[in-house]
Length: 355
Image 1 (cartoon, rainbow, N blue to C red):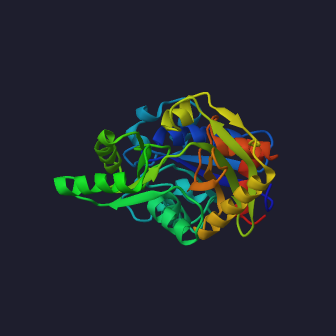
Image 2 (tube, rainbow, N blue to C red):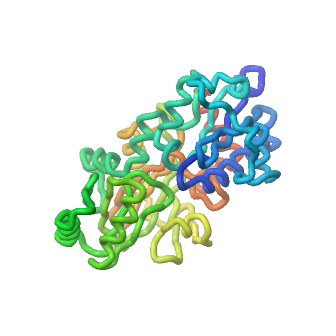
Image 3 (tube, rainbow, N blue to C red):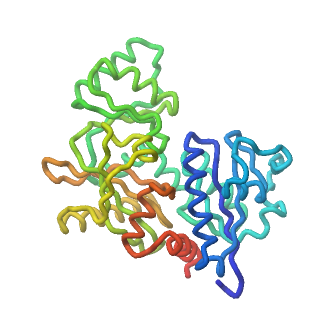
């Protein structure tokens, strides 16, 4: 126990983003970890599910979703909390929560929205704050900061709020891509996660469709040059002092590391990655430097590319609420580093409370 009594963890999951189902899977893992024999002496958990419509369910119904007693799309109206009052988080449902643990992937969660809301409760939150979350979610702003720090990245272009109904504008965008980048290229919405809305474009004829797909999620679009690379990932935990996990590599059978590859494929995971110790050291240093640049702390996963032909390290992006599913890299990285999932979730709370 901490401070003589169990700490109540407010586990928030689901959400309005297109990563809703991933959030539920992650929350199930975290919920089970807190309810393990080693942790239930220290913690209790109150779960709060947010539907795809943005409705908050009470903790009883939310817990039933996590343990599989009801499906998330078959919840009853009477379990919905009243959110019409600005201070709805002062309701009795939330009063016993000591520490918030949001597992909301994507917008209205990972982008800092939930962090801003929970700040009004004046209770600590596992993970980073509003600024770091917002910057970590926004690929364009994140890459701009990395560029200012001269951190190594792939070549990229940015298109913001362009008029796709104008034929001249569309032709201009396509010509700029053809002139400045080599195929293949990856077209990405600036605000999205789990590779949703991303397309791998192999030739000119595929560009416009990929731009439209990305724009359906976010009118701000990132286009990156594709290289022959290895997918390398590093876990981060800590507050004033950031700690790095072992370095891991993901090898996938699909053409690229898309949504299905991340969550539904039997990828080959190697931890620690089979790379030179000097490169490993540099990756860890860049991971810490990039997180500090974006004011990211608590926990995160930093993704890299390692170019196959040159072994050049290329910083890709930072995920401030990485997946906690059974196929997720973040808990696997820390397990290989000496923290199993039960120890990891407890450690994250301890970091939050400066213990």
